[in-house]
Amino acid sequence: MQIKSSTALRNDYGTISKLARQTAEPIYITKNGEGDLVVMSIEAFEQRERILEHRAKVLESEFSRLSGEPTYSVSEVKKRLKEKYSHA
Image 1 (cartoon, helix red, strand yellow):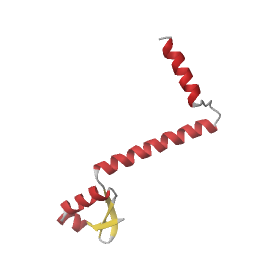
Image 2 (cartoon, helix red, strand yellow):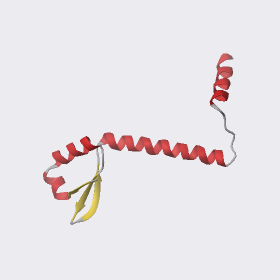
Image 3 (cartoon, rainbow, N blue to C red):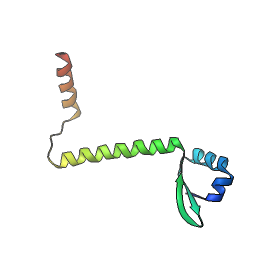
């Protein structure tokens, strides 16, 4: 975990930007010794968002399964798709 002051961000943005891209990790920015912001590269942020979206979908699917909604095996889904598209 990288922690930098707001002064470092203001005075040396280029170095912090480079560090964020190289590490692909959030950099915590402090102001007056207290946590204030988190800075990260766009690529790392977008990857994190994709992971969170995927986890939300998996969790939603698991809740559906646990609530009794029907589930299908991979072979059942393939069979249904073949049937559907063979008649199209």
